[in-house]
Image (tube, rainbow, N blue to C red; front, side, top):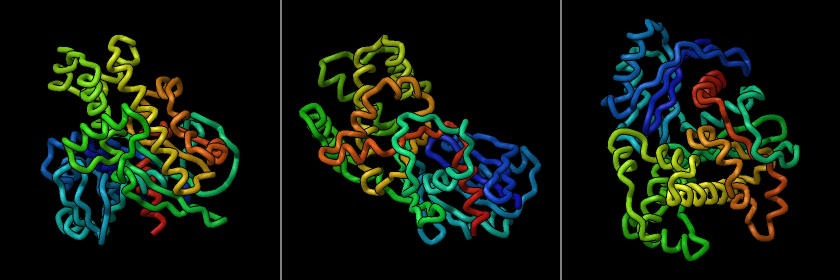
Length: 324
């Protein structure tokens, strides 16, 4: 079966043509588009079809936001998506929408060993699993193991309440509460979270915002610039911000793992972990992950992997469509 698959994110939208055969997925004609440069998903799809001359009648789109009754309002984009309307506009016979982390969860059994990097081996146990993805936002999904196969499902756990555990985090919480009202985990564990952590630490430490970072904010990815300066050791505040970010990432990944009883594995997705893998391995991520009081031994049984395959949501969208 051939199907158009898409990964619709706050920063970029990736499209490709997928061919599925059992659990195997072959992707062709993949393209990426800057989401904010288009008024709608339909406009991106039409551009893709024109550029590639692909002829297809079915599509599965992984969306960064909750999907209800074949519709979704994207969390970090001003788009409202409706599968029925997309079928009409594009002339497709079938369009399905699913959460992007649910799509990533669907991809796991189709990924090759080279598509994963092991952060912590844990114990080899078959059981529930979960995916936690820090990127433009923070996405989370679960996989229920019924004894024979996995059943992926979406969550919006990234928008659950952030909880501070020490004086520094309490000060951070107060600043973000004043700014946003509700402080979710996405506010601190995401690309926007890296910026929030850095801005907070500038004030908390009484430091000046460097000119090069202001320039990066105007012309490129500010969070990536902070991460690069931290890796180079050229900016103490950047280094502290990334150290705090990785610890908080570990804490929230551990929270999700506890709630899903993820003895089958915890999988880190999104753009930040694979792009900063060396820094992640050197960080206090696992300290935050393990730090669950009396349940630390349980946490140490759970394997932690990083998904290195950038097209995992496309692969998962194809597998989801094939399973319907």
